[in-house]
Every structure is written in structure tokens, then in C-alpha cells.
Image 1: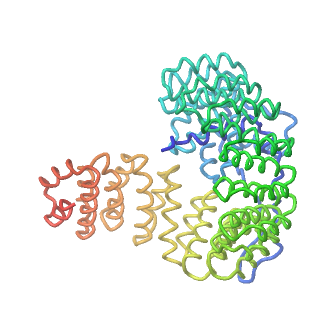
Image 2: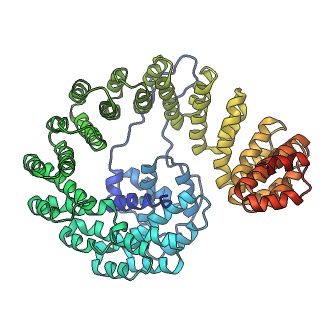
Image 3: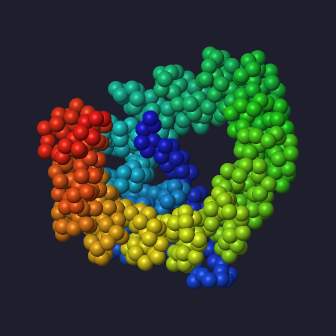
Length: 622
């Protein structure tokens, strides 16, 4: 199983290396708003409200400075971030689903934190409840500290980090350290007693060293035990070597022992050589004696050649087999070709490849690329794709891109699609895009959809987007939704996010609802999230609820939640449920679950307990 959050380390490290200006210098989609409202809708023109301040008057502990060359939008962003403390940044992260936008925010924030404030910021981050936001902020802050004072960052990890944290964050720190003082970073990595940490640190260092001295990086690669070498490390070394001297790199690759390392090296050389000189790279790849190495190298040549001549790369790729590597290569070629001439790419892949996974994947790639630049053209081609499953996947991407510039046009297109996966995906994607700008208008439209899964899921998208702007407003809206089934689905979703950040407010709101199924469902949503984060606080709150159906519903959710930590407590709580039928159901659920998890301990306790005989017998039969 992959260690949690380790996928974020290379992403943050890479983006930090490129710098904030590159990330935010990209052209952002225009928020033009639609020309007119759809018949029967209550839509009003949307306006961008991203990065809204919550009006908090927070001092700036990081000592923010604002470079004079920053654009107005960037300066505004920094101004808003400067008013937020770590918890405020975390709340914005939680409300931003797109990972790229979250990383942009992290880089803006961390780039302003001075060396004297990083330790305090990390201590505040450690108090956050959401583990994802906590780890994202820790990665960003550690990367920043590594740029400013890597030895201090390493000392902090050694003093305060758990073994897992030390391993995860050290990879960013030591990689950044290597760009400033390679020998010091290497010396630290070599002295680590934890073999996993030492190997991961060496991989990070060599990944950085490959850019400046691939030959030396290769010499150090042997220090990493075979089982701890990252697949990308050797590929990066030979990729960079091939950019400088492909003939030398190819010769050195052939001196490696046969196996995965050698194949990675060969493919890294072939790809980067093909970018510079595809004919020479193809000649070298063709000369390889081993069929497996030759095919892999030719596939890499195709990927590199696609940078300059995707048509020629396509024709070479058609001479290869139909294995997974060739399929991935065809997808890479189709993506590059679609950037320059999507019509020609479509014609080639649809007419010259046989119907099957390779053709389907390439055509899907072309449609997605077309959708990013010309969603109307992609919509016209969608029905020509031979796979209805892929049509359904791509329709959502087309709809999102189209709705950004022409909401009315995207809605009309989605509504006119034949019923099925494509229409479902398109409609829900349009509604989600609309709701990000105008949740009230999107809600009105979603309520006009036919009752059923499409409407419920569209309303879920509305609720999710609305909650990022005004979570209490979103919850209040859900209580007015006439579709009772949709209410039962959506409200717990909103309350889960609300409870994660403001449990007191969410729980108080739920208790103000009138007695009934909606109130009970709201309490379940609060308890379900709160108990997993702070079972003591959740228990105290449940004790404040008057006896009745709502309290029974809260306890029925709470008892199974605490079973793993306090089995006897779970039974004690279940016994307080007033409704006999509900009480026996929860007691049986807890007993059966305990028997599955810890059969010996559960059997001993259940046999001696005062549980009803039918519940005992049902649980003990398992």
C-alpha cells in the first residue's frame, strides 16, 4: 500500500521549483457570463467570486512582502492571503477541490513566510483537523524552509517529526538542499539509520543531481539498494544525459546489466534523442539486439518524435505491437497531434487503426484535447467515437469547457443529447460549472430536471459548489428542496464538510430544524463526521439532545463509530436508544461488527452480557 500523501511531495517540489510566477502567469478562463436565461430558469449573470476574503481581521505573522512587479490580480491574492492565519489558509484549501489551484494557493502562501515564522506556522498546522490540508501545508512549508535554510529544516524534522513525517518531508527538504549544497545533503542522507529514509533521500538527491551532472548521479545510483530504487530516478539520469550527449548516454546505457534499470535507461535515451534527432534515435533503437528492449526503445522514439512530427511518429508506432506500452505511446502521440491539427489526428486514428482499446484510447485523448480548445468541435465528433462508455466520460469534459464560455449553448447541447451516460455526464457537468458561479441559478435549473438520479446528482453538484461559498446558506437551501430523496442524500454531505471545520455551528444548526426525518438525517450527518474526529465532543453534544427520535438517530450513528476504540461503550450508548426496534437493530449491528473485527474478545463479552437472547444468538453464530 502506498504511504499516504507521498504523491504530493514530487508535485509540490516540482511546482515550487518552477516558481509562482509561472503558475499564475497562465491565461485564466474568461468569465463572460451567458447571453440570456434559459426558458423557465431564474438565472442571473454570474460573477467570479474566487478568493473571497471571509472578512477576518488577522495579523500577518509571516511578515509578508509584496514585490512591485506582481500583477494586480496577484497582488490582490497576496493581500487576501496576508489576512489569513494557518487555519484560514486551511479552510480555503478545503473549499478548493482542484489540486492545481490548491497548489497555487500553497505556493503563494508559503513563498511569503519568512524563515523566522516557519516553525510557528508548522506548529499551527499540526493542530488542524483535516489530514489532507495538514499535509499539503506541511509539504509547502517544508519546501519553503528547505529553500531558505535546509539544515534548519532537517533539524526540525529530526527533533519533532514522527518517522513517517520525517520520511515524507525529508524527501522535499533533501532534494532542495541538494541544489544548494550537494555534499552536505549527501552526507546527511548517508548517515540515516532508517534504510527507507536513506533510500528515499538518495533518490530525491539524484533526481536533482541528474539535471546538472547525470554522469555523477549515475555513479551514486549504485549506493541505493536494488529494492529501494525509484523507477523514475534512472530514467531522469539518462534523459538528462541524452539531452547533452545522446551517443555517450546510449553507450553508457548499454553497459548496464540486463533488466529493468537498463530498459529505463534505454527508453530515457531514446525519447530525448528523438526530440533532437529522430532519425538517429530510430536507427539506434532499431539496432538493439533484444526484441523487448528494441520495442521499448522504438516506442520511446515515437513519443519523442511526436514533439516535432506526430504524423511520422504515428506511422512508426503502427509498426509496433499492441501491448500496453504501445497503447500508451499512441495516446501520447494523439495528444501532441491534436494540439496542432486535431482533424488530421482524428482521421488518422479513426481510419488507420483497428477498432479496439488502442484506437478508443487515442480517440478519447483527441476529444479531450479538442474540448480544451474548441468544445463545440469536440461535441460534433463525440457521437463518432465507437465506445459509448468513453462518450459518457468525455461528454462531461466537453460540457465543462463549453459552459465556461457559453453556458446557454452548453445547456442546449447537453439537453439534446440522447438519454444515457453522455447526457447524464454533460448535464451534471454543466450544472456544476454553473453552480461555481451562480449556485442559486443552477439550483433553479436542477429542480426543473425530471425526478431521478440525474436530478439528485445535479442537486448534489449545486450543494457542493454552494457550500464552498456559503455553507450555511447551502444547508438552508437544502431544507427547502422539494425532492425529499435529494434532501436525504445531499444534507449529510454538506454537514460532513461543515462539521469538519465548524462542528459547533453545524450541530447547533441541525438542532434548530423541526423534529422529523430531515432533522434526524442532519444529526446523523453531524455525528458521522464529528465522532471520527473528536468522539468526546460529539458524545457531550449528543447528551445535550432531548430524548426522542432525533437523539435516537444520533446515538444509532454514534455507537458503531466508537466500536473500534470502546466496544463496551458502544453497547452502553446503544442501550440508551428509547425506541425498542431501533435499539435492538443497533445492538445487533454493533455485536456483529465486533464479532467480525475481534471475534475472541467479542464472544467472551457477548456471552456474559445482558443482551437480548435473539441478538446474542444472531451475533454468536458468525
